[in-house]
Length: 210
Image 1 (tube, rainbow, N blue to C red):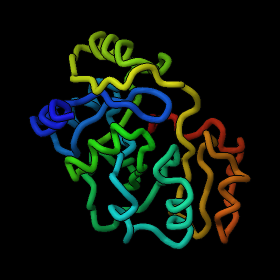
Image 2: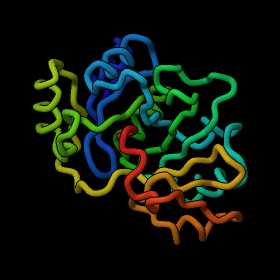
Image 3: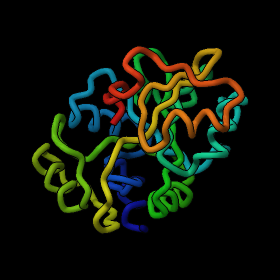
């Protein structure tokens, strides 16, 4: 854990576990974000940002967001929020200025976030178009093929599975962008306003954030 923190503080990227697969990310600073965008061929940015708790974005959450955070964080739910005060680095945000945030459910990554008291980006640790890595060894191999050798916080084999559920809170009613481990029924059980589901059921959207 100390070594992972040292690499992050040096402006480097770190491979870290999530609930399902390994992610790759760094602090929200110019150098690590620029490097991550090159590695993932993501000129427009738009990464998931991992945060230590809902308190980190308390002023950006409406009543529906607070309900979702209470029910599903830490865990595989990503919330897309407006960031009117530009709290988050522009290279971590989508072209429309929104930011996608999540409190991760894996205890090692959650501890890392709380130890550093800073958010980190998270994108799947694989070459674009290839399957996500369920082991640190595969994640390191994918990183090497991209031309980088990051430190890996190895938590052993991970179960794999669907990417996090993705919900936008930028409109009057929450919108399901992508279904994942939490389905429509689960989400609606904690909401006052039912989720809006765009054409296509929300199943195939939001992949660029992985």
